Image (cartoon, rainbow, N blue to C red; front, side, top):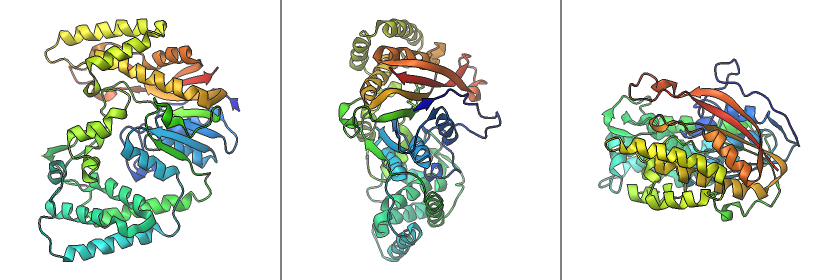
Length: 428
């Protein structure tokens, strides 16, 4: 493997790349997961490492499978791990084996089955639906959505594709504000699409087009629904077999990756309450938000980090600053208790991943810094220092774009300049 450093240009520089998961590009448009990163950025990262056909790319924070899709397009193997069980299904769908037959025929079978169900008398069609789901749609729209969900089995081997076409339809037809990351059932809006059946069919057609256009792409990849901090999630990857890692870790920015998908989780009945969502989804995630914190978790993390004094000393100073800021505010958020567990989690992922990568393998992380309460946390540099303790060397730390500009007019917002960066590490 030959590595070469190149600039990853910021959006607006003429590259055509944008931030965030695209709603228009093939595979990205299957479902917009707010935590995903740009497929344009992912493509640029593969310019940083030159890999031969069939080389295996690793992603411990797989998300919706942006890296996996990019790897497959380049005839590369892929092994990913994703803690969000529903989003892991989406990534696995994109990089996995594809069924025989026609997705369009399968979608038509679902619609036909649903149409028959419309004609049958029924009691309360919304019995068992979570109140959030009831509040997000008009009754006629919700009836169509529920009937489509109950008819998904008619799609046979294409059931998972049709499930995601339906999940992606939810926010398209909601009559309240359901933008990322919050669902606001008390804020009405006119939905961009009025007919769930037509929108579901259109989404299936778009997926079919993407699959047809990618017929010559590389081998199917593997996505593990699990926690990259745990050795069991890596069991399917032989030691030294990873040629490179291309990933975007969670940002230390108080974004609740579980809560962002509450609507979809409740609609599929994968969770029926806030508590069950926390237990089944959030519990396995690297701590990145105040909602995940506890005194015990903070203490455990800080004890772990003491094995790396160069990192621990920097973090302890930041934790003290954040604690002082919190205590000076009425109902201040516990940002000080997020920092230790966040870097504890990142450290464990780096430790677990290192023996699975070949010596000299590149690790490319796209990650942003942050400044809770105006206290600047240089997340990429701290990750680089932590990686150096674990067995990686830092090759480059390159700014991709500026961040946080949309909040600059908020008088309560800090004025620390923020950026998203490409951290290039290498296995020693």
